[in-house]
Length: 385
Image (spheres, rainbow, N blue to C red):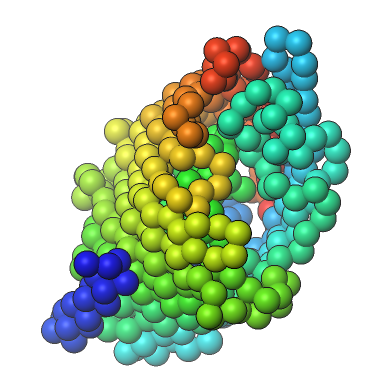
């Protein structure tokens, strides 16, 4: 059975269950961060990071501005490469309707990506003989893009979430606090968020149904091409992305942080590309209050981006050196492309300066497909307004 028919059945099942549900206390509506856990006002007031404060904000108009420059330097046996880039963006949330029976939010996300110096990510990898690319966009100059502009609806006491408009499928389906969005975490792109599918933001519909605080499922359909990328005028007759996903939590009742996201996708072909399909699984599982297990499995065929597969296992440490807002982490990585494997050790330390600024140096040791060893040093800052 094709994935789109499975998604249709899931959506129908969601509606039937939603109508059958009794009114209960709702969950926090915010699919842009893929969170649906309850937080009381005391917990929210203790959040020190501007991104978290924004995500849980109940303000009618809630903008979030960020500027994130990053420099990386890599060296191999006889050559070296470097890359300097930055991301400048604004994410905006407007709570347009907030009634007892249903709610509606408007989300917008505009980003300017700039390549400043050194090699592009593609040239960086080629120069050092790697299939792993640095954590940066593939732009060769400056690019302004509308990442999201969507209306988000919540029905049946926030159990059913439907979003219509332009959105980033990967951001909505596999985001986690510690291994899901490369502008907000500090592992390398291949470890943190680089998907095997080349699924970009597109016009479509996204739906998620929350069976409980700890389990939800949903699907999405979005177009895969546009006649104009800046205003995003879609070409609905071209190709499509289909995806189904599950989210679940383990041990959350005991107070452990938990976020598991499994997505199955299928992409139809478009000019110059073939069709593709695969899975993406990301997980952050708290083993204690200050120790988070980080897992990722990404495997796909057909229309791929940079890798055929990525497998990651690591740890994130909260409050290292008794600094409450700092983080540190390490991960073991195996990337595969066309039957060639690359292995890496990835580490980072996030130094929290204040709620507006943090800085994160990272280090990678990479064993390339040619059995050479490369070292990559990087430093990323995240400035929030």
